[in-house]
Length: 68
Image 1: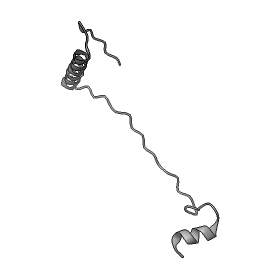
Image 2: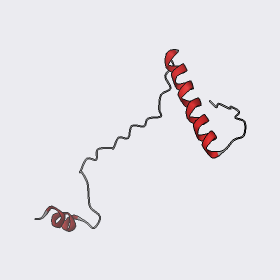
Image 3: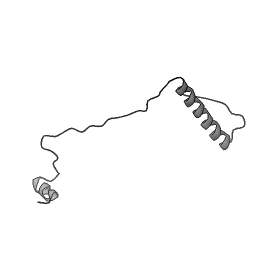
Image 4: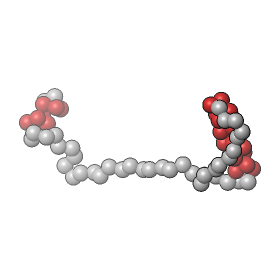
């Protein structure tokens, strides 16, 4: 979805103020109409391994990492 609007004599300040006003107006209009726009969401899940985590280098390195 995109919104285009026009302002006369654009300056940095007028662009900023008009953009803020347009965003606020559209947001209020959507809220009044009961329109909700969901934000993208991702769910990351890890796979469970049968032997747990194995450190690179073999069992002797794993023992040192555990402090034994």
